[in-house]
Amino acid sequence: MDVISEKSVFYKSNVQLFFFEFLGTFLITIIINFSGYNCIIVCGGLLMCSVVTGRRTGAHLNFGVTLAIYLVDWHKNKINKKDLCNYFFSSIAGCLAAYIFTYFMDPKKIVWIVPIKFDSDPMFIFACETFFTTLFLIVVLHNRDQQLCIINDQVIGALSTMISLYFCVQCIGPITSAALGPTLPFVNILFTGYLYNTAFYLKFLPAYISSGLLSSALAALFTRFSIKYASQKSSDEILGGNENSSYQTDLFAFENNQDYYKERIPFRQIHSLNYLLPSYGALEVERDYENISSKHGKYVQFC
Image 1 (cartoon, rainbow, N blue to C red):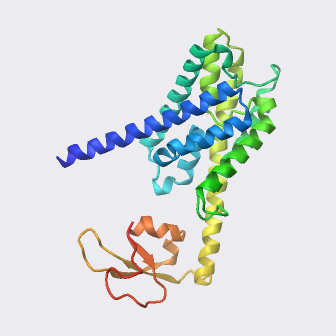
Image 2: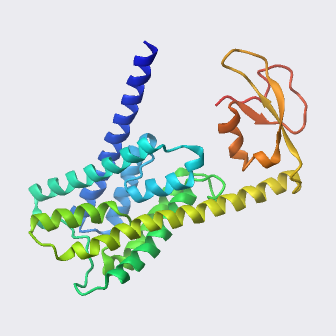
Image 3: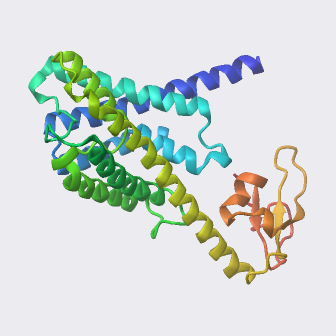
């Protein structure tokens, strides 16, 4: 029964992830098409899709975002390889479904994600997309990390993401149509090429896809460096810069209802304060060694 239960939970979670990410990508692509890639409308649509799918999937809506998050948190295993594949196929399926829907509603509404000038150099398109997509992804990654964002507020984070999207689209929209990731141009160029029986824009496809993937790697690398710097600075402020110092922690074994116990954790094993909770379970940093009278003391947290 336990095995069946675990399988059913695993199946349900994967189906939910696929469905909500598919839905979010479908909606944002529909909004891009029917608005003619109007920046303000697309930013509002991004906020709407984030509200609909954010709690379920994180509202990636772009495989470039998923890949960047995976590269930042790969050591924490927050997104495993199966989820990574799930995000990829759900984003492709959602985008393709949106283009098919738009075609049957009004083919003229389909927005071409291609260079505005026919004689554009693919390397120039690659450079423009890489720079601005990296900039956009850095903002997204910084907003989701408590150590890096200025104010830990999801609404403000969503607004700053919308502002960065608006800025990037305004800058490179007139040049590259602002793909800002590999998903949209991959589906768009292949679908429109098949629909209108043309292979002219296929020469730009490698530039769009490679720029999206490279941007994810660059943004993840920069964000990991920023997290490491912020963690080191925060730890130095708490411990006075002494690497031999230790945190005094109270761990509560809530699974078997045991009393709490204390364990000293060497500072060199701790990357940041946020590292403690996922690594050691239910605990709270306790540095004053006072006012703990029972396992339900105020210094015990449950996670």
